[in-house]
Length: 415
Image (cartoon, rainbow, N blue to C red):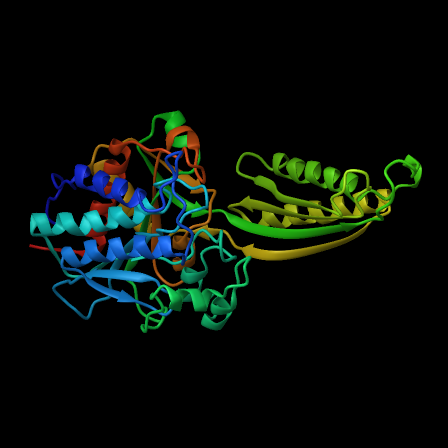
């Protein structure tokens, strides 16, 4: 590989693109509400497509609405080096989660044209559909279809809270493409993303070299007691499902604390029934999740949850149902791609450290079918999935600079 250490992306152009995209679905508090497959999502996709066309890139949309913008290589038959992330957001999301990875990929391709650099392998930037999962659950379903974790029919049948099917909404906004979803070779995949945590900022680190993705287990728990009058039912005779649920919340938190330093555990939803102020709750539905980069630890956390809930239910005379609705194994990223990221950070003189991703990302599914790695930039206060999510232009440029050099190492620059 020739000496390309002086190559630089256009940081100002990247930032301008981020700010313009952020206006689509922009919220009064400075965030974004660009739920997947809504009319607002279509506007964001159309803007991205226009920018890709202006850059001379060939756009393909597959059957899951995934968008792939390709810059040709000198050898057309070679598999592409891919970059990318997602343009959809949480309902009260920020301007950078996912979007940075897509627009950084576009900036890499724009910069390669500016610098007249050719590569043997084609290079693509991807916008993956429904990464967030906030409208259509589960998350990352389109990259999951691409990697063979779900069938196209399963994905199309997913419905939002209004009963609208994912497949119908893809067609409605005009992004149900004709290209097959998956089934093609990829040389490598790189995803740039904000950390969504506080470690890099707290330690003054420019670049996180992501070595693993956390495994995840999601559960739905239903505790059933007996609803009765809040004023006339003596305390010893109650079968209060909400009291049991409160103990389950504490249990879930304790299980996370019992497996430091990487384990996290969360109860995200708690729905008591019937929801009347003077009725003892007879049933509670709740969700919980565990995350850790080691499968053995996830197994231990699962056992602690089930044993603990069984004990709580027996003491409170409650019936219990536990459904595991998502089992996402830990993901070790490709050593070669991780090494390329590390060398790119060193080449740019950026402070860097190895880090584990606590969140799920499209790269975690693509790692099943292609060598894959991720790059993290800091975010202010570690805040994400929030309208106050913020990064600096310098952080965005540094991450994109590392992305550029990692991609060029794998795509093979032609002299």
